Length: 385
Image (cartoon, rainbow, N blue to C red):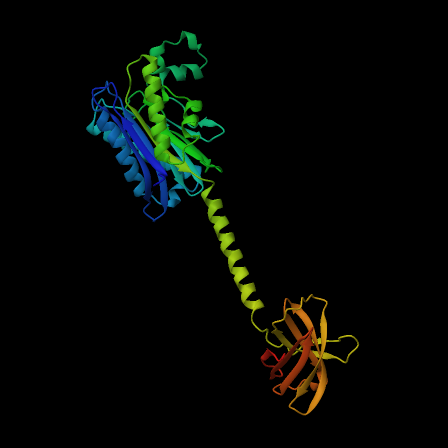
């Protein structure tokens, strides 16, 4: 079963047509950088060209993104400049092609470790988790503006609560067209929901959160929200507006995920190196000198591994005798290096690089013989009968 990470859904209701437009997915910027996007535009049905303006909002936004690079989103100043360029081009095209038409627009952009939200009108965005919901946008209606200016809610006519104060193509819009919010990418698992007023007019944060609590797929969250909005709309007794929603599934911060994967790979590499080094014979360090239990100065021949059933620990040491060039026997010492590996020491006076050496020793009931060259590789074999 496929678990969607991005999903969008739009439903026509009691309207003669559906002027809502929506897009959710991933795309590449001009420099190859990947971004995730969700956008919703709600063309105003009572105005001419509402659907065309809504379509232009989404299409031009995605085109503007594709022609951008990661450098356009490095800081707040660059993001604001990027949004303003999009807004100026959008308003100019609407005035040129669709005079009198207007639309709301809301988009969420995830790039790197940033979450960028822009909106105008009453389409909006929420961040929802299992524990809470938070609205990321403000509504640009006449009623909401009057509330922010201190007017008493009871004195504001209900029609003003839905009358758009700002929108794409609306000539009354003054100042910056879009509100822009830039935040760090959420650090926990949740859902970014972008929706038209056909959804948000019937559902607040609590209802949206309940729709995403038990869902794993963005598709399932979108379907739950749509079903709940439809049910609540019917219960309200009002004429139902078209409903549109887009959902982005967000895991723990992606940059932290990449960091965790990198750390894990490093640990695996270190472990592999340790495993290899611990199972290879160490080269002889000719400068290593030791005094073992009052014996004359000793020099290390290196490390070799033996197979034995005897349990060894780091404090064990074993006496042994070595024959150099088949001419004389000298004392040597075996010290436990790690596990069943031993470091071999012989008297410094007998250390003649290149000479053949044979070492015999016992560990418990097991007998072993080690042969090789002084300063070279040693090989150990069992000679137990």
